[in-house]
Image 1 (cartoon, rainbow, N blue to C red):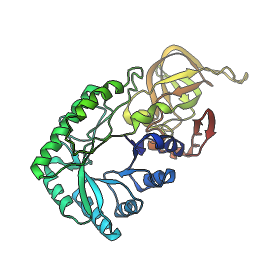
Image 2 (cartoon, rainbow, N blue to C red):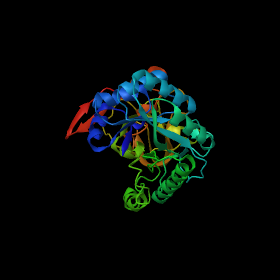
Image 3 (cartoon, one colour):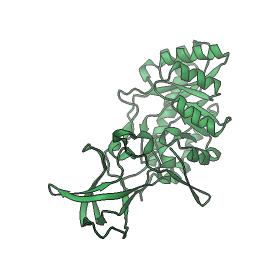
Image 4 (cartoon, one colour):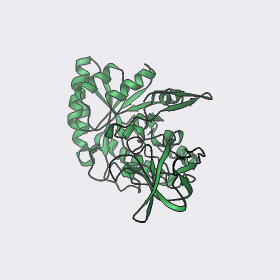
Length: 359
């Protein structure tokens, strides 16, 4: 299990994860630098659809274990960087399979996307990977979907991967050593009490892996969201409560410049209301009871929405809303400086003590 740093690259989180994962999956030179700041010898694998020649050269210098290559041109860039460094690097070809795949929040393959090598172009890519100097074709990378919530569907997906790679071994006369099955194990934001059943998945995974050939010495997962979503909370104070054209709005000191995940995925993020009794006596205190509200931020755009039409028992100006499952794809994907509002405080709990850390 590799940790996909794109979900959350905060240094305290990386240091907590480092001892319990196989390594980190990075998708940029910046993420690679953060990984190496945690440990010079940590196993790092390098993916991403658009890598620069400078990033590839730096990654070789910083001893990346494997490269997930997404195009013929990238193979040539990596070959040139490897030759310049006098190295031979291990390569996995990321393939955009034809599908079909189980339903999920995001599809990374089975349709036109910027990710991977079109399955129909794989013969040429395999030829390049085997022929170019400085490269060693170690296997394949198959990350086809994101936020899958069904353990059974994910097992079926791995069976599809197995059959595809076995067919490629026969077609191209090669032996796959490493199969990267990507991430894609999801988080149920709509019903947090009904998460992906990882226990059932793991129990069925062992007999499935027994059907893989022995020369596949490593099967890599690279999960991000699934590993860290539950570890984070986003707390915001309610600045105002008002009614507009028959709808109730809760306006908070924050929004999508801190936590863009809800608008990115177009969902209502789960939250609880933490009552705060203190309030200046000289000010009116608007509130709503037993109704549905939309939680919106402080940005000058109607798209700054964290939750829409959510039932609440009571919420007042001055209360605090606590959004759960905010540990992944929150701060990392947000437009931090839109309107130049202050960045949120980041606090980390370690060994029973809270510590503030700058993002």
